Image (cartoon, rainbow, N blue to C red; front, top):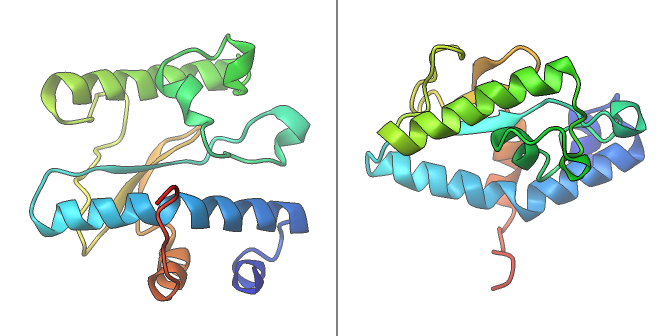
Length: 157
């Protein structure tokens, strides 16, 4: 928690707790899998959702599972928690198209997104899904380094 306070000084204590516990519970496992796939040369793409949930004035940010309503283009469902405004609908269309492209071709790139390079251990290219989608290299570097020295315990086992 202390390191998260240093990394994100503008966040509230509740936001810090939510970020640290969510990242500690699920993100390292996804990162380990991507790194191992990249290490053996398997085609791998990483993404991060930065689009904030509109509830509570956006203070909850892009919490775990918010991407489900977007990737399946179901923003009109109240359970999606994305809102159904123009920004959510536009992002959902881009994310759903990317999922369909990946299912069809094994590559998530579409014309509606910036070029999305494969994840590798040097650049760690990550598609940031937000109002304006973009690719960032190693966007959570400081968190990655933090979790590199903290043991990851797989949930449920």
